[in-house]
Image 1 (cartoon, rainbow over the protein chains, first blue to last red):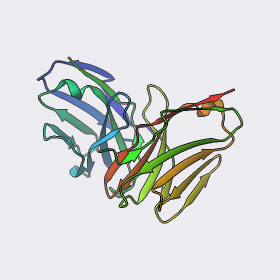
Image 2: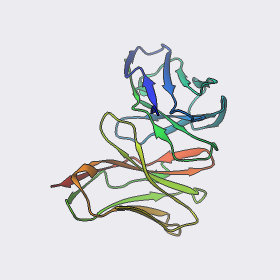
Image 3: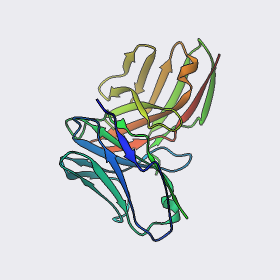
Length: 114
Length: 110
């Protein structure tokens, strides 16, 4: 059974650019959530996808968007990058009901915006 | 607004003693609470959870206590081991919204 994987591990982008981060869910999991963790903070919920549909969203602007694919892998897209978008981006997968809270996290993608 | 708060950024405990990590929340609609452990360069790992209909849940050395009237959650680790040294996050959920605290860095001294 493979765990949650994320790519790339690290990324450096320039303000105004766009970025796509990728996540492969743990085998059999159909729900994926994305989080932003700024330095010294806890993870902040961005949104969740359940069976390819967005199923909840935190307090993030529309330039943060996502996709979930039929194999339940997922992408996080951020447009018009700002310096404050620099953070660790975590995805987490879970099985079954979208309300199930036992999520399995990937190691994260460290995004630096200069 | 920070709906889940961990007011102690760090905690040091002697090996074998009890570690108590605390968490406070503001939203009375939260119905599920969790603790996660995080090692450097890894994602958070689920540790233990508790539903709002319970006041205690135990799993081996780990016990989570929930005081709904005080909106307070705590994690007890007994006995503490050096391998428990990590950052611990508490989290709360309502429906499919999830909120994490800022974390407490636990150091267990051999």
